[in-house]
Length: 330
Image (cartoon, one colour):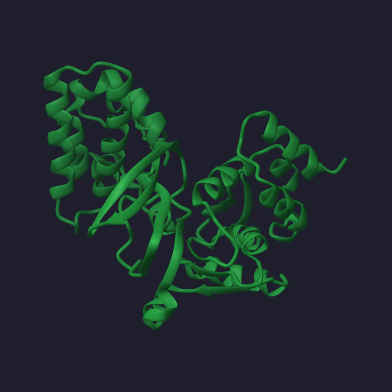
C-alpha cells in the first residue's frame, strides 16, 4: 500500500471529510513535485515546508487534515472559478484543478514576490486540466472586472480582515473562506455577503501563519507588533483563566499606549545595549505595568514566541536583565 493511501485511510478513520473527489486528487498529485524534502512528514499528517524566503521565513503547505477541512467547507463543484489568496507553493491549486476539471479556473494572488516566482516556476511543470493563473496584487488590480468573478475565495493565511486588494465580483451563492484573527490564533470563518453586509459562519479555531510574510519578518519588539501580540495573547488567556478588572484595564491601557507611540522611535534588538533598552519608550511602558503582567507573563511569552523573562525578576531594579540581556530572544 502506498503512503498516500495509508494517509487517506487514517484521515477517514479520524473523522475528517474525505470525499471521493479529494481522495482521487490526492492520489493524482504527488506532494514530492511541490517540495524539495520532508514529504514523509506530509504522510504523517503534518505541514511541510515548500520554501524559505531570503529573510529566513519558512512557508508551509498545510497538513493534509487541514486541506481536507478547507476543501470540505469550500463546497466546490466542477467548472467553478476559485480565487486562492496565498499560493501554498502551488500544491493546493493543483489539487483544486483536479477537482474542478477542464472548465475550472483557478486564480492565485500571492503578495510575496519570492513565493510568487517560486509558485510560477513550480506550476510550469504541472500539466493542468483547467486554467491556473498566478498573479501579483498589481496584476490582479489591472484585471478587467470580468476576470474577477469567482464562485469561491479561499484565503490561505491569517488575516485580521478581508484584504483591501480583494475587490471581486461576488456571484450568487459565493463566499469567502479563511482564517481570520491575530497571528497567534484565528477562527476559520465562512463569509457570505447578503444585502451588502458580510455574514459570518464560525467553523472553529485554527492556527495559520500570517498571509503576508512581512508580518513574520517584523521585529517582535516593535510597539505595534508587541501591542498586537499582547492583545491576541490576552484574548486567549482571558478565556482560560479569570483576570481581575484592574489587571484587565491596565493591560488594555498598555496596548493602547504601545499603539500610540511615535513610529520613529529607536528599535530594540539583541544587539541593543542595556542603556538603549532601558531608555526605550517601549520598555518604559512595559516596566510601568510590571506588577500587573508578572503573573501571566510566562503564558504571554509562550504565545508570542518571545522571551523577556528577566523583565520582571531582575536583581537590579535599574537594569533590564540584571547584567546582560541574552534572554531577549525573538
